[in-house]
Amino acid sequence: MKKKLLAAVLAMSMILGLTACGGSNAPAASSGDSDVAYIKDKGKLIVGITDFEPMDYKDANGEWIGFDADLAKKVAQSLGVEVEFVEIDWDNKILELDNKSIDVVWNGMTLTNEVKNSMECSNPYLNNAQVVVVPKAEADKYQSLEDVSGLSFAVEAGSSGEEAATEKGFDYIAVSSQSNAVMEVEAGTSAACIIDLLMAGAMVGPGTSYEGLTHTVELTTEEYGIGCRKGSDLAAYINDQLNAYAADGSLKTIAETYGVQDALIGQ
Image 1 (cartoon, rainbow, N blue to C red):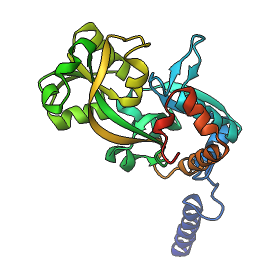
Image 2: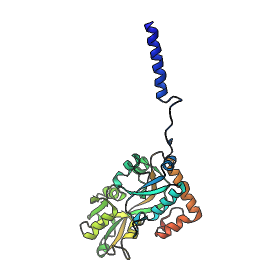
Image 3: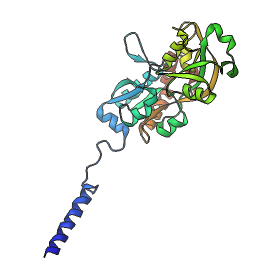
Image 4: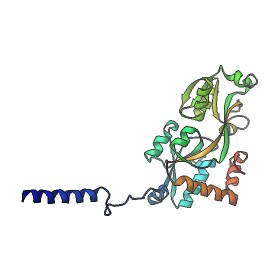
């Protein structure tokens, strides 16, 4: 009798265990595996950025604008959600994505092997390069890789500029942003910095805040992409939207607003 009772209890325990571990009565995940559905459910697209003109920067009213910012706003509108821009530590961008502090990294991000292995990336949409920025008065001395090899550099931590400095064996310090790297050169605390070509075009030289600086040597050529969580369907959704904006001309219009139209891929 005791044996029969024990068998019945064990059988019931197995049934309950199977039900709790994913049987047909187990509840489904709230938004399945779809990031697009997750973003629509919460009503907000959270975009990870840094202060990076002409991609993402604030206007006089404190609103985030720029080529990437404007595109992110359009994608959020197509999703029927609000957009929120969050400044992140660029060195922690993958962690920020994975813990869902942000939904997408959209900030002139170079498609490095690390990025492509750690994120679900959009198709490349802009060409770029890493360039050396020096005082304009000294630019004639720094026109080749050999010329700049002995300089002390400032670079953004975790950026393609830092990667280029490491690959070339340069002496450098890592700072929190590309803007701060430029400020190091302006202040004379670093002889040069390495930043994105598109940023250099907007930030240094005639008509900018740093007229006394200029860019010289191109260290790399590269492409920009947009980063989502690994396996996310948001990357494909963004690709579809960018293709639509290219077809209706709005992509080029936004690019012309910020002077990056010549860097557009496939235009």
